[in-house]
Image (cartoon, rainbow, N blue to C red; front, side):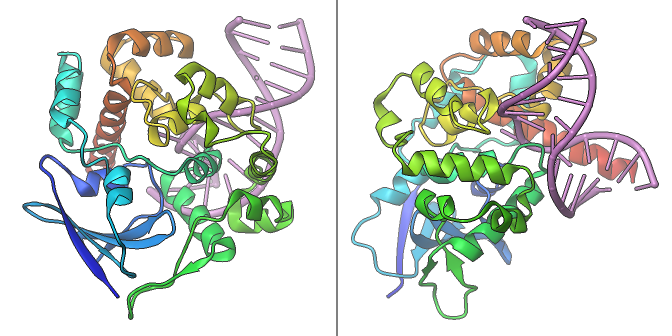
Length: 292
DNA sequence: TACCAGGAGAGCG
DNA sequence: CGCTCTCATGGT
């Protein structure tokens, strides 16, 4: 039985939120304002409306707290925006995609996804994850006429898949990292659930013990799964954005940028990061269109 | 065709 | 420490 629910929301740019590179499984469903994807073990279709966000599941659900949490509906968004530094780059970034939100994703899916993200373009990350889910994720019910959908494969499942079979999902050298991390998570060598209450620094240190997880990926998981809104992942795009916007004609080291980010962007630095990330990518896309 | 992608890890001086 | 190289694959 399909169920529909409406979350009242304002300043929520669903398209930017689902396509900005924090989650990799959402797909436009024809209409630009309609998206289908998976949240945990459920197939979900989301529609952006004037009142907020309309959600539809394939199977009746008793309550909607899980989705409200994932979408972070209750967040005081104005307070986040107000906490940003008042400089020109931030103003431009917020103007470019006001309403962009950070999701709160399941830790294992987020961790595994970002292990697969290293030196891959977002389009390719999506392809790899789609293959992985199709081959190793449990099937879930979908409304009639919709494409088949799968859960994200569990750590226990992936720990049991051979490296060769993982490589067949186009992930290349990341296969060994994913498999070994899956094994350690399964063996409780790393307790992803237990990390929820720890300090940000200790969660980061714990994540970085895992193979294939360095500072950047750990910060992504802190930000997108553990809700540490001060975590500030710096990737090649952020090096470009911070260098051009805040250090013109200089060549700051990665450490210098990390240090700058930690003091400059305030308590919601991670949110500021995502705005800058989206902004610089939009600018790059616009530039490439002009070049053609 | 070259270059590069939401990096990490290992080796080197 | 900081630098360089490799890892695998495909988009642009």
